[in-house]
Amino acid sequence: MGLDRTCKEFALLSLKLTIIATWVAAQPKPECQSNCGDISIPYPFGTGNGCNISSNFFIRCDTTSNPPKTFLSSTDIEVLHISLDGYLRIQQLVGFDCYNSLGRSSYGESFSLLNFPISNTRNKFTAIGCDTYALIEGTLGHTYSTGCVTFCSDVEDVINGSCSGIGCCQAAIPKGVRNYVLNFDTRRNHSNVLDFSPCSYGFVVEDGAYNFSVSDLSNVNFNTTKFPIILDWTIGNQNCTEAKLDPKNYACKENSVCIDPENYSCKENTSCINPGYLCKCLDGFQGNPYLSYGCQDIDECGTLKPCNETATCYDVAGSYYCSCPEGFEGDGQKNGTGCSPKVKSHQSFPTLLVALGIGILFSLLCSSWVSLGLRQRKLNKLKQDYFQQNGGILFREHLSRYKEYGETAKLFTIEELKKSDKQLP
Ligand SMILES: *[C@@H]1O[C@H](CO)[C@@H](O)[C@H](O)[C@H]1NC(C)=O
Ligand SMILES: *[C@@H]1O[C@H](CO)[C@@H](O)[C@H](O)[C@H]1NC(C)=O
Ligand SMILES: *[C@@H]1O[C@H](CO)[C@@H](O)[C@H](O)[C@H]1NC(C)=O
Ligand SMILES: *[C@@H]1O[C@H](CO)[C@@H](O)[C@H](O)[C@H]1NC(C)=O
Ligand SMILES: *[C@@H]1O[C@H](CO)[C@@H](O)[C@H](O)[C@H]1NC(C)=O
Ligand SMILES: *[C@@H]1O[C@H](CO)[C@@H](O)[C@H](O)[C@H]1NC(C)=O
Ligand SMILES: *[C@@H]1O[C@H](CO)[C@@H](O)[C@H](O)[C@H]1NC(C)=O
Ligand SMILES: *[C@@H]1O[C@H](CO)[C@@H](O)[C@H](O)[C@H]1NC(C)=O
Ligand SMILES: *[C@@H]1O[C@H](CO)[C@@H](O)[C@H](O)[C@H]1NC(C)=O
Ligand SMILES: *[C@@H]1O[C@H](CO)[C@@H](O)[C@H](O)[C@H]1NC(C)=O
Image 1 (cartoon, rainbow, N blue to C red):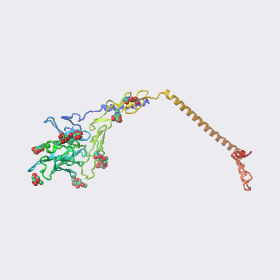
Image 2: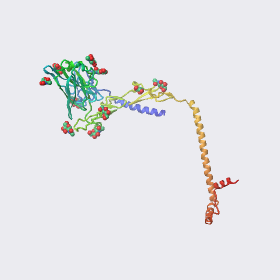
Image 3: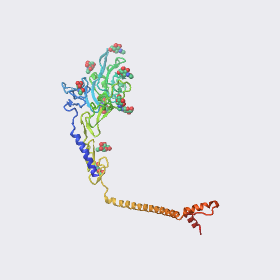
Image 4: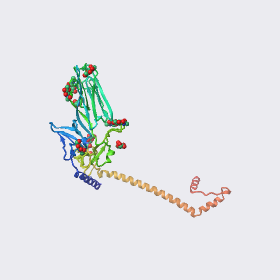
């Protein structure tokens, strides 16, 4: 058992050493710009010169502003955060539609053409105003249009913090939206609510990133506000099965797995944009799955300290194990059975004796039973042999010939004789 463990340890250790030897630790591609201001740029994103996986993943860093600003591709869409979990946080200005006593005074259409779809699960289309029809429109293979309405006649009716149709409304965003335009309409040009809600505002916003405040209705500078939006990014336009067939361009590197985006359906229209795929480090590994050896083994022993203090922790590729000291047993885990002293031999001696005693007794019983059976069988065989040797068969045949004259003679078996013997006085 000791040898077995040593062998296992050695094998795992040598595997780990190979991985470490070939491992290049970096979030961006080596020799690529790792961040723009305080926004980090992990590969597959990059600032050109082979640092981005494709032109969709190009990041433009504008160093003329202070702090530097990060933009997506060649657009003016500002990036706030890039996550390797397949999302991107950008920010966009709100759309607005303002009125005075003469009618519409200013209008700002918010529109976007995006490389990646807006996450339908992590954003909401939100509109505020008291005479507001707000629509979000775009193309999604076919054109789509959705939105919400919000009305109120008195500022007293508006509940601060509640976005439920009075002063504020929300709508879900369809799946796969990559472009949109915001449109507004009113019933009475805000004429009856001009004093507290001269404008309608509309924006797509990350879930939870906006809390409706009554004061936003009358805030004429609200149109300078920018809100975060979550985009879902994926690699290419193939699913995992298809992507693996092209190893040269397959983006998932060592110690990683390919993931298909959840619930993606292309059934409605065959010309819809294909989902693409994501990569994820295997369990027990962390880092950038898009870089060669970017997924690094997690040192569980050092970070989690998962073993009982008496046990020794061994970090192996993708995992770890705890080993109890000599004379102890258990899984060695803090969360598990820990290490407890092995059951001592003097404690087990009496039980062993009893067990041994029962065993011997049982086997004795067994063997005597068997030998008894054997002896019985031997006896029977002997009887039969004697019967045959002493002309028993001939005698029986001879007897059967007299059967036709009535049952004058009978060959008694030993059992029958025994029975008759008992019946005798
Ligand atoms: C990175 O993006 C730039 C700008 O869009 C593009 O010219 C370049 O081809 C991209 N790199 C790769 C490897 O596609
Ligand atoms: C709203 O204002 C527009 C001009 O901006 C005007 O043409 C229209 O008649 C107005 N509608 C109402 C209901 O006042
Ligand atoms: C799919 O969408 C395209 C436009 O993007 C359209 O021309 C085509 O007819 C649609 N096909 C189906 C089956 O709806
Ligand atoms: C919105 O309100 C919730 C709870 O009231 C709070 O946790 C959250 O931080 C607020 N969000 C913003 C953007 O203010
Ligand atoms: C509404 O709530 C916000 C915080 O969510 C607060 O700053 C504001 O003062 C409140 N307005 C009123 C009128 O209560
Ligand atoms: C906000 O609206 C005002 C007019 O109400 C306009 O002058 C200004 O340009 C708008 N700001 C933006 C960022 O659109
Ligand atoms: C991947 O795409 C191919 C072709 O579009 C399709 O036949 C296959 O079912 C897809 N696989 C998965 C797991 O979605
Ligand atoms: C995927 O579909 C299942 C069932 O249809 C649903 O419960 C789940 O919330 C969906 N996930 C996403 C991210 O849409
Ligand atoms: C131990 O279990 C708790 C909850 O049961 C969990 O939160 C913790 O991460 C576990 N620790 C280790 C080292 O597995
Ligand atoms: C280590 O294991 C022993 C025996 O199971 C247990 O008594 C002790 O509490 C464990 N220590 C920790 C830190 O879990």
